[in-house]
Amino acid sequence: MSIQTPKIEKKVTLNTIAKMKGTEPITMVTAYDALFAQLFDGEVEMILVGDSLNMSFLGKEDTLSATMDQMIYHTQAVCNGAKLPLIVLDMPFGSYSTVEDAIHNATRAYQETNAQAVKIEGGKERASIVKALTQNSIAVLGHIGLMPQFLRSDGGYKIRGKTPEDIHALVEDAQALEAAGAFAIVVEGVKVEAALAITKAVSIPTIGIGAGNVTDGQVLVWSDMFGFFEAFRPKFVKQYMDGAKQIRQGLALFRDEVKERTFPSEAYSY
Ligand code: KIV
Image 1 (cartoon, rainbow, N blue to C red):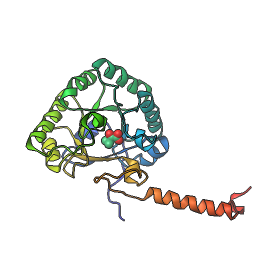
Image 2 (image 1 turned 90 degrees about the vertical axis):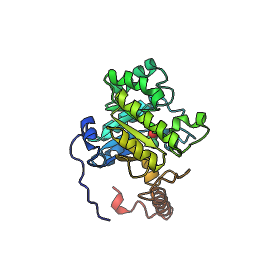
Image 3 (image 1 turned 60 degrees about the vertical axis):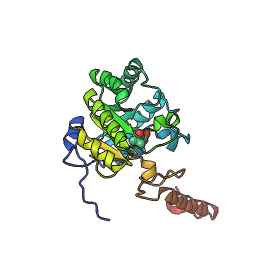
Image 4 (image 1 turned 180 degrees about the vertical axis):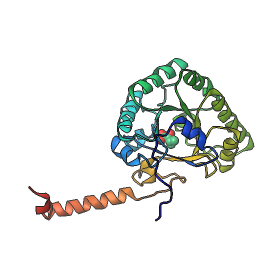
């Protein structure tokens, strides 16, 4: 495997991301702790401390019970580990239901962590909240299409953009978020045609997940892309390594060596 793209050497800012639209695809992964954030430092432009941690790291069935305290704790850890990427704290369900809550909680995100932006799920119905945040100097990453925080009210994870009407609604959502001051938009679980229409309709970058290769960037959940999360695998997840298998192999070797008393050998003893 030959790696051709250079590592990122300078701190990524909102300006860097804005300039990348139409010039260079943006890479983003999730991270939840300092250890992995350090590994991702210099490898991707953006890190999302996603509320997906509620599933991949807390073993919950969905993201809905994630709390602001939890997101702050994990974002602090990620900020300790990664210095170069633009770090985004994912606002959990219920933390931005009103303008007051949104400002209060996003202010906590800025004051208690070094995150450079927050992420909010929702389209035009959330534009007033995004506007209130951006007017209060808080950078916002939008999130439209399949929105995991809407799981229960939508009755499941639903792929969007299957009809011209729905594509039109998604385009309107994206335009409303851009007008409200969002610096970029995550576009999740939409048909490729819809992702293309959204990407063409706005001048801010779109970051796709399950949206084909027509968006301005791509985001994946790290535990999915490296094969650690085994509960289910959505179609859009490409596994870049078989993490769970490798861990089990390592543990089996450790178990064998301990049982056989070949570990620790002299080399690992004082
Ligand atoms: O929480 C998360 O990890 C996300 C990504 C799926 C974009 O919102």
